[in-house]
Amino acid sequence: MSMKIIESEYNKKIHFAGRLTAVLVILMLISVPAIVCLHYNIFPTMSGFLKGLAMVWMIYLPICIAEVLTYTPMVGISGAYLSFISGNLSNLKIPCAAMAMDNAGVKGSTDEGDVIATLSIATSTIVTEIIIVIGVIALVPLTPVLTSKILEPAFQNILPALFGALGVYWIMRQWKLAVTPLAFVILVSILVPMFTGKSIPAGLLIPVSGLLAVLAARFMYNRGWVVNAGNE
Amino acid sequence: MDYLNIANSNLMYLMVAVVIAVVFIQSVVFFILAWKRGLALGLTKRKMLDAVRSSAIFSVVPSLPILLALVAMVPVLGIPFPWLRLGVIGSAPYELLAANIGAQSMGVQGLGQSGYTAQVFINSMWIMSLGILWSPVIFLLFAKRLQTGMANMKKNDSKWLEILIASLFFGMISVFIGQPVVNGGIQLATILTSAAIMFAITAAVKKFEISWLANFSLSISMIASMALAIFYSRIM
Image (cartoon, rainbow over all chains, first blue to last red; front, side, top):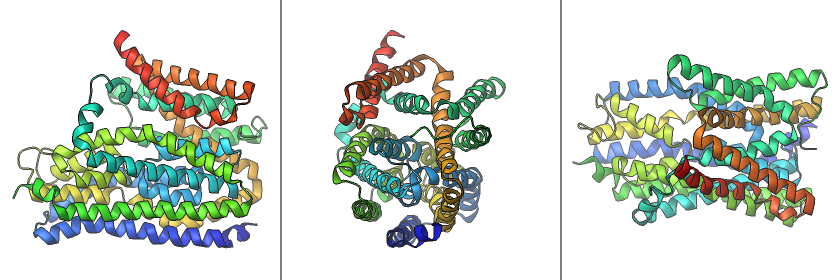
């Protein structure tokens, strides 16, 4: 079974196209600052460059590893080739693909689910890139609208607006899976700022919350408290 | 030379346009591959088109904060580089953090502060570009192994794989639900409003069997509760 999945024609094409485009984009992302350096003959100091890189990598290397492990199962392999290049997974790609799969009546771990997730994520990427291009072209006329005081509360609350709807939809399906991570997040969101005065960034909290959710699910699954993912 | 001349140069625009074009083409290629695969698997065009349509409509609103970030970044980093950074991996908070670290590690207080020369700008570019490159690199290195791992899990216990995926999803959404709930105020009011609207739409879809509405339930709940957030900000 697994060999059949790995060796299918579609699968080969996805890996080929995914690797080719991802490697291309990665190389181009590196060459942008490199070409600027060479063209203008201006280079950062070695110490400034290394110090900065070390600081960012210290924070983001663990986050990146956790993201790949947490997000890949949710978007599927082909969806992941797109998502890890274009970004915006938690606020765009994952909610988008999850709803598209559910409305189509397919599950994430199946071939059909993978197709719907890929179509959804590809569409989402195309729409976002077009909107950014519009933003770049119409930056001057759009700036007063985007930064208007009237719309400010709407933009500031975009994540609660997204996750309230998404949350109730899925919690109604399988609330048992939500109890542990939700209790954990609420607890640390109250306690950590109380003691440190700072809140924890979402990027650090997501992998921990995900891990706890999985452990709790396994516990409930072993005891027969949870028998399906809520998408039956 | 003022660094903004470099930041807004034709060379920068050209390079950025090429990278974004490749990202765009990648999505088009995957779209075509998935579409054909879907037909081969027996998915109807109708079903796939529904997914495409609802995804396109949903993606508009969550993309708007990206434009807000663009507006914030352009005065200090020029137009093309923020365009590139926001169009690929990363997010607005990451980009600003990395750009600032790029400045501070060169001995400048922060983005656009005095002493933010072309040399410092270029260091910011390097740090922003390389800092978060790990996600695609790690994924590329482990894609096949992750796939085999999931395939084996599915073979052993497909129910558990489904529950595992759902758990990861619940872990993620819990962060974005728990934080506004604790923060209270307009955030809490907005999240409750959005949940209530979604609840009502989902109930209506079931009761009156209007399945097309399900495709837009998330977008409708989001936009309506954002509009109400404006109202709440006036009265709270």
